[in-house]
Image (cartoon, rainbow, N blue to C red; front, side, top):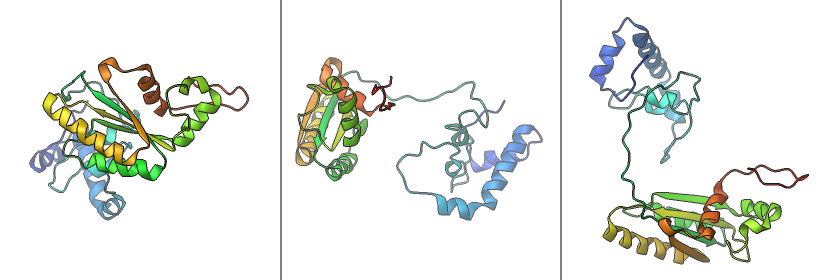
Length: 221
């Protein structure tokens, strides 16, 4: 059993000197990274979030710190099994505000998403729903979208959620988000999460995966 976590360059030196299986893992991985440093650096992309498995890019940082955890997260048990986790959590606020914004083009939705991410306090969630998905849902089960979306289906939808626990700051951010959406979207809807309408719930579910066949034309699940 190996306990992982971000360790300093000095602590890494101690791990490399271990004669145990843990030491062998650290030595082998450190050697692999150093021998392929150029390939790793060329492959690395500047992105805000990496949810791919085998994230070797974040194992050894420029300051020499080392962490095995990124390799295991997303590896689906192929490298090992996580038996216990200690993690930090964000403050939970049930009084969240949710926006459903409908756009006439994907570009308009992208412009809005970029503007939202540039805010001093970015929303807790920004979910994109492609218009093609809406068309599929409408073909297979029109009743699911009835009274949920405009009569003319949008090319894209953004589901934006804000959960800032500070009431004053949340109201200020809601105003900023509303201005961005009004500038780019055809129309939008807004609701508090604690009293979210059925329409808002249905719209937020549109981003979930679909599986269907033309034969039975049924939604999954």
